[in-house]
Image (cartoon, rainbow, N blue to C red; front, side, top):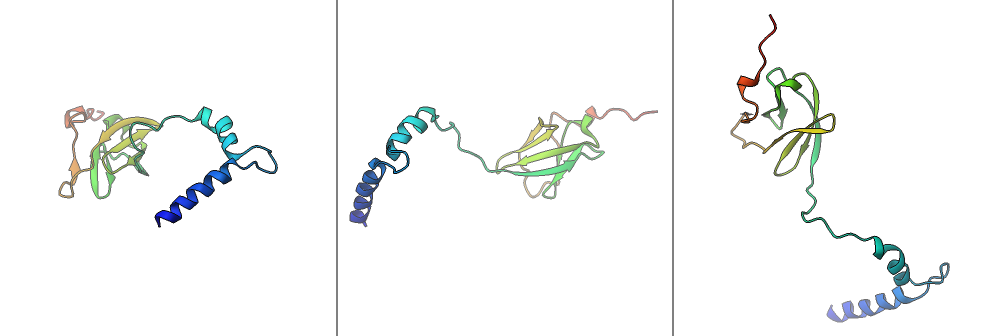
Length: 127
C-alpha cells in the first residue's frame, strides 16, 4: 500500500505540471495564479451543523422544540420565530435577528425558564 501511494504521489505531480491542451499552462500554474492569491485561512472554530425549524411563540412566551419548552422575550407572543438547533445551543431568531440563546434541556425537563425572561416580565393584561 505504501508503494502504491508513493507511485500515485509521483504521477499526481507529473499530471499537475503537464500543460493543459486548451490553456497551454499547467494545473499547478493555474492554481498558483488564480486560486492561491485569494485563499483565506480556515475559521478558528470548526463549522457546527445545525437544523432549522419555524415556531410560533405561545401565550406563555415559550416555544416548543423536541417536546421541550424554551422561554423567549414576552414581546414576541404570537410571533413567528426561527430556531437554529445545534448539538450545543438553540438560537431563536425573529426577523433574522437573534433574540434568545438557550442550551438544549435535559430529557427530564418539560419547560426551561431562563433568567432573562422571568414571569415578572409578563406585561399586565389589558383592562
